View 1 (cartoon, one colour):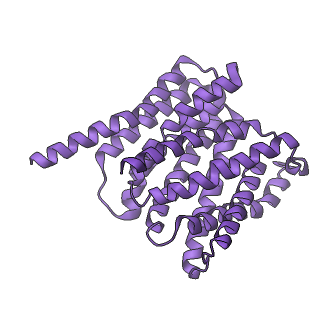
View 2 (cartoon, rainbow, N blue to C red):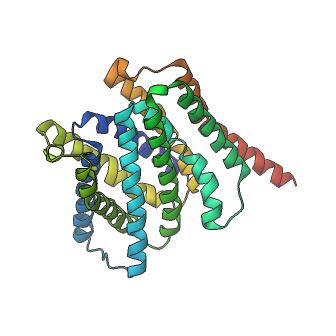
View 3 (cartoon, rainbow, N blue to C red):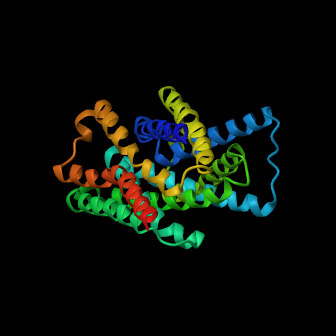
Length: 296
């Protein structure tokens, strides 16, 4: 189990680069997600073919996997869109509210009892984002989009936890990343019609190509398939709460790369402390509840 938690935090560290790469790439967020999902899904397809792993599944299962891929694709649009409309730091902190949405949604979807410890920690994260929303008035749209992305992240994590016991992580990753790609592809006429993107957005510059490849392979295929595998061993809420470390890594790296652009108000850092602090409180509260139950 310790190796699994070490792997989890290694993945979170890698994911800390994601929003930074999204800002380094010059094309629009829609184009970023388009190329990211295209390259990642094709890479997984070739990998499965090389390993001679069958991708044939019952139609009902394919529909479910593609639906989760749809949630993933919209989540990534929100994630990168939030970062472009504000800063990497704002986008990452909003993403940390995933733990709150998980604590609320998981009992209803899985028909289990509400864990009030998880709910309390999630509420702390929401209070932190509320504080940021109140004082970072220039970024209200970005915050709302970022929180919507966190809501979608909670949904696909919960659904994935049910799928991991039935299929390999690579097969799940192929269908879901393919579903995310199809979501963006089908949505393109809508985005073009409203002048959200143009043909120029899909003309990759030479310096963008390297960042897109790193984003697609290092920050997508590896962490995504490994995260699916970890869902078999670690609770969904614990994984999503651990992802609260992503802003810590991302904010520090963003400040080192982008400098003063990432400097925020004091209230932002207070809110971020509340959001990110939940990850450090969770093990203590979990252990305390376990001790109480054992005494009883």
